[in-house]
Length: 160
Image (cartoon, rainbow, N blue to C red; front, side, top):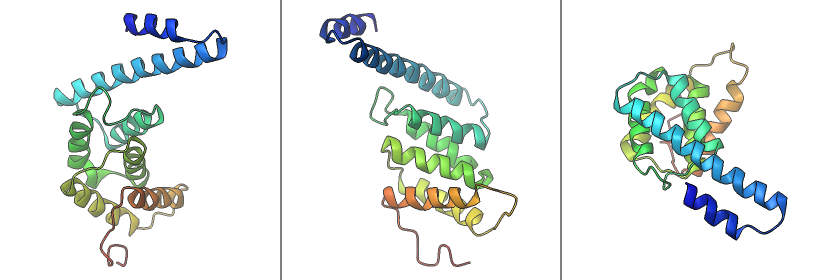
């Protein structure tokens, strides 16, 4: 990191705004790397994350623009394996956060994971919950994200 900072400082134009933006991007990358390492270590140690915690981890990394091909190529596989084990317990909002994160980081899950996700999404989408104010938004995010991942559910998927 220190060598990267020195190289960045040498290559930075004299504009303070540009310098600040580059430094912020570098610090964000360092923060993301640290967060990914922490989450990955806890997953390896079989630390239990709730469905909400798993969904928010994915959402946060996507918001920070962490990509699947970045410094931790196996992270998303490990993360999705943990998510897959708990998919039946995910709420509609949690499902939408996970699938949205996948579109943002441009990670295409394998077909087994996708099948499990579709089953969980089918279950929550077909059981109307009037207590959830974000129900419509979560449904829209799930459907849009599936389209962006080029996942086409079976024709009868939503017809129950």
